[in-house]
Amino acid sequence: MIKVFSSDSCGYCTKLKAYLDSRKVKYDVIDVSESRDNYNKLIEVSGQTGIPVTVFDGGKVVIGFDKPKIDQCLNS
Image 1 (cartoon, rainbow, N blue to C red):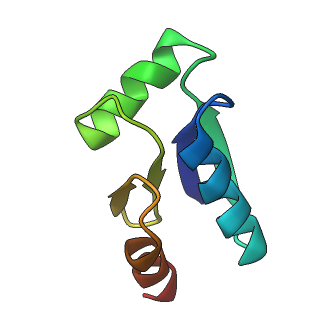
Image 2: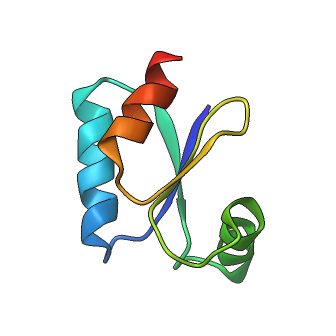
């Protein structure tokens, strides 16, 4: 399952989730503002604190709302 690290106050996170929804992609949202554990998990998987971060099956990580990279991961 695809995981999206985000928060409700992040505009790029909202755009990313809307884009995935438009592509009918199922994903789990991990809100980094809800708990320290979620925030620490973000740092563990991405090595940074910026959001959004998308983790694909197989461990591919896309930092930010990068449509070309997201499409590449979805199509592979």
